[in-house]
Image (cartoon, rainbow, N blue to C red):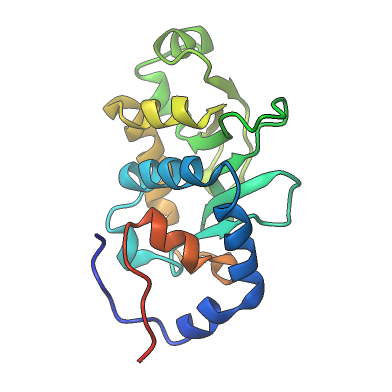
Length: 197
């Protein structure tokens, strides 16, 4: 179980927000809930040291954000999204969730110099250009199914490309803190919900 910490000054109000609870309840009842928890947990394990301590201030986790249809969750740092999960648009039976992660191109390229080499190591992951301002031009977006992404995060070389991109973003506070969903974060961080005093 995750470590207990004192609540932030407005955390109680954010936890009581009916719209945040409603979005979490919808995700909880969906066939994607376990995938969203597992993939976000795997990402935070490699991307953000001491994620519970820096939660909401330096990174935020949204739940069913309304910015894009079919979006299940997004982890953001500074002004950009760094890891996003979507419903599977091609599967009426609600198969695996799709995901993308933004990584440092130069670090990834030290181990896989082409998209073909990456595909050989991680079949099903696709590489495409990315242009987030905060990430500098040295970035690339990796797409794939959530379970393939989890497997990639378990590879130290891939994880290094994830960490290298996120580390400098964590030096600043995130502008997405208002969208943080504590209910989902409780599950991802494997902690009991905080109870107001």
